[in-house]
Image (cartoon, rainbow, N blue to C red; front, side):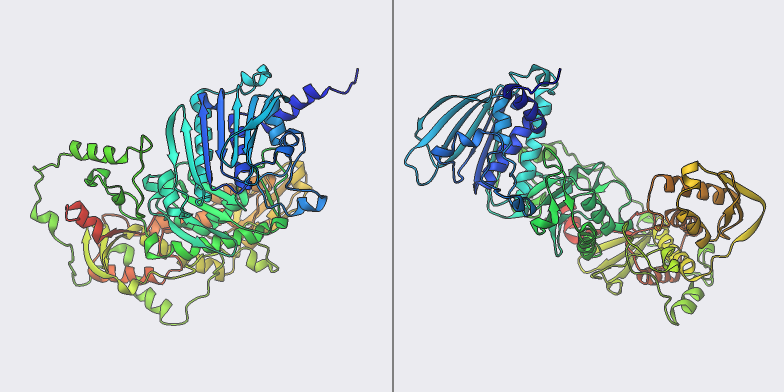
Length: 637
């Protein structure tokens, strides 16, 4: 029998969509405080927020006559007409949060506006008001939420442990403290102070207080048309995306669009892991849809392509600078001072209470550190290997000097200067299969400033520029040189198939056989001779000259799999992989001794690369060690 549920049950069901766990309550209340114009917010939780949550702010407060209305479903002062949904500029707008919270908890409201001489206290249990009285208090609002899900045991039993729930809340408040650096946050967990920021508006101060770790200590600022933020150099990464924090118009969100723009900007500079990035996107409210997720965790961009391009361009402006060259990873034991200023670049005020024990930790590390005084250095270890035998050029470099003269004395071949974009569309077929080489948008690093200083382990070239040492990996550098040469040859040459004795039969599923055949055009453009053979089968009679029969077979089948997964085909990922593999095999290896002439030629060729900062796999071609770091290691600083 179909019947209409009473409001008591329907409110619990609706609350379950908005309030998943204690974190959801903290999120809604903190966002309300920010919308109220608060510049000081205190969050206190007990037992992971299950038994007690308190959020106190100094915002505008709620007028006494509107206090009860605020807890009714869809009661809000942030939108009034349908058109308002098209340009939302507040964090909250639906009018569901307070009604949902009070429906599944015992809740107390204390609030006072600046105009009112006295505040009001409102007590609500299970969505029903059970007490109302005047209250003496400062201006602002305090929300106390107790016994979360006390009347919905089915939801309560699925909550995680106290520690897990508390961790989620702490993580959220930390992220909000980053973007809202002008708001002083305090977070208390089970009576212990976890986080305190001073709200001075300085992003770097907020970052150092929230994340006082190495990954966040040397971030580079970026600025675009829509994006502002801070990113790590390509060599500083984490094993997951936890270091990537995105805000859009002040709202913390997850976004594939922003992730794609970020990684497009880094290009092949990242070898492994995920770079750290705090990105703040500002766009007109009418160009995003924030109403697609119950908790507003995800959004849609009207012009996602423009956002990706803006982020990528802003990242590229800074990652090709000297500061973005990966630093040598010195052991933390070398940091002997207990000063926090040596751990983070920006000076920060020493935190009070139990919040941060970094000073004590570093002092303990200093006491534990006992330098090894028995190390013996031999004369052979200190020699620089600059020997220039008559014509002793290594095998990997034969012809390199002559090739450089013929290739660069004349007109330099044209290369595509556009970074790979997943939404890029080309009008001409011959442009679709070109492999882009992403150049340095702002070329702040100049190879002309490098002075050759040494050569060690028959692998690493030491150069100096100003107060920095740059250590170059000869294998990675030569890989980059050969890779860009192969890319130029691929982009400018004709891709004619070479006939094979035994054709390759490619069996596909019915949806691929009868669907669009864009993938066949891709194969033909890169050097395949392929045609329809009937009965869900295609026949390949010719393959690219730079592939073996086995490689060509695997390549074609992989492309069919890509087509089935609806991945964009124009990126030529398999072709790029082949060129990377060939450049790696042909490049000079570690322990292959180079003469000084070869070293200088290698540096000259690398300086002419479109992207000289990393090998095709993403490993850095050179790293940086500052004079300050060396002096600190010798206890001179």
